[in-house]
Length: 253
Image: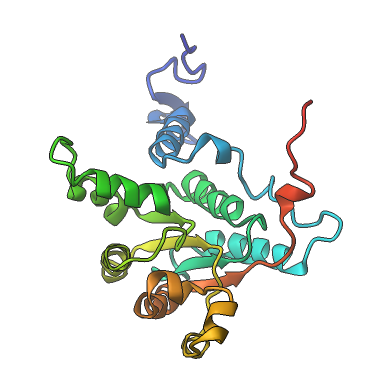
């Protein structure tokens, strides 16, 4: 059983002596700490990423691309300026697998919760689509709206691995529904993707050339939604080798 706060004995308020000699009650620090803990739990950050913060983000390991340190700096400025200077805009973190996009996104969310008291939510793009599809089963009591309501209403949403699911008309419509709703409500969205945010011209090629080039974000979510993201998010491009294959390889203690 947790011990009560020694400052307020678990009451949440403490009596302090003011400069004029009178006593007054004020909220105890433990109330803010408990609120932060509750917000972090409601954010649904996966256990694998609970440790992710600005302090644990690696950008100076041997061979690290300079874009990683630049991304870290931009992320820190984003948190410092939120919400006054961000004006409802979010971030689009692009880059190949293992460059630390999710780590940095979670670090941003955790900092916003701790420092600004933000109501945030972490969503894995693929898992979210599976949950929505599962809700169509007549034997499932959860509705699509019940799944999407917290996604729509989160003050700050992390949408991780955007574009990871095979593109279909249904996927495109669902992505459009989520992004348009948050755009219209001026809510902040932080997105990570392994696909390059290429301009429309890169998608105009056809035939063998199109088959040979790598897919872009426009290919995966539709060019209309890629264009919408340009209004919603500032792009942060992260380059480099797969961190997990180098510094972060699994090993026994």
